[in-house]
Amino acid sequence: MTKTTTIRVSRQVHGLLSEQARERRLSLAGYLSELARRQSKEVLFAEERRAAHLDGQDPAVMAEYAAWQNSSGDAWDRQTDESVG
Image 1: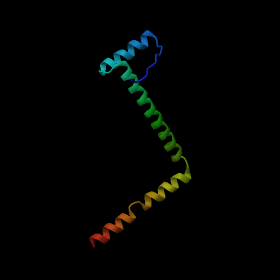
Image 2 (image 1 turned 180 degrees about the horizontal axis):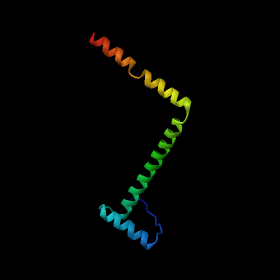
Image 3 (image 1 turned 180 degrees about the vertical axis):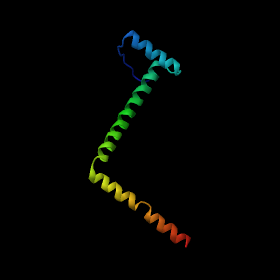
Image 4 (image 1 turned 60 degrees about the vertical axis):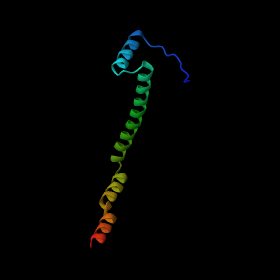
């Protein structure tokens, strides 16, 4: 059996969370678990967006990206051309 604990929230917050859980046909514990998982994912996505933004401002990273974009598909195109011809 999963061990549990108690968290203290105001009655207003408890009511709001209970209502949201009920709308989703979840228990309050299930809804809180869903919120926690969603928040963890959002943090990861935010970190990825921040890293991508910083990469976009780095001339060395953008030069490497451009080099990859310019060479992308060359080997595949040659292989496809050879197999057709």
